[in-house]
Figure 1 (cartoon, rainbow, N blue to C red):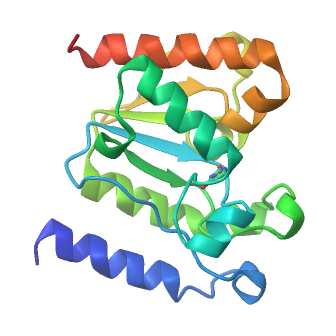
Figure 2: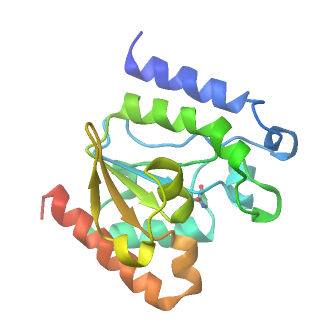
Length: 185
Ligand code: URA
């Protein structure tokens, strides 16, 4: 089976997933999107209301800001892979629960294996703590974290940047730093 076929199967599995109670309230699961050979994968927290309606990641207000900031940094959105820790919308945008994260995380790990990106950008505290363990964003944003086989990049979630102007500036600078590591112009 080709990698594209494996990814398609994974999407199907995610869309039909009933591993946590969120499947009862969601409209659409949101597996993620982007080129199969993307150099960078962005990982958010959980789909919001707009994502739940459309089945696409980061298409609401946070997504618009992320898309703008990526373009500004010289990273076209359609060249990166975008997903979140949770694939189902938590009602009222409440924080993901431990059981939901535990149920959903294997999907993210399978996406990482299939896409095999050079860098995995973790957006915000939930992505950071779920994937590499808790880190204070204030100290670690803009930094890379290498494990045996992966390189992670730590930064803020665009929703935090919408709320606090100083986070917006940090996110902007972090994305430029990431672009610098990616090379190109
Ligand atoms: N926030 C996320 O973390 N993911 C989305 O897909 C949208 C908003």
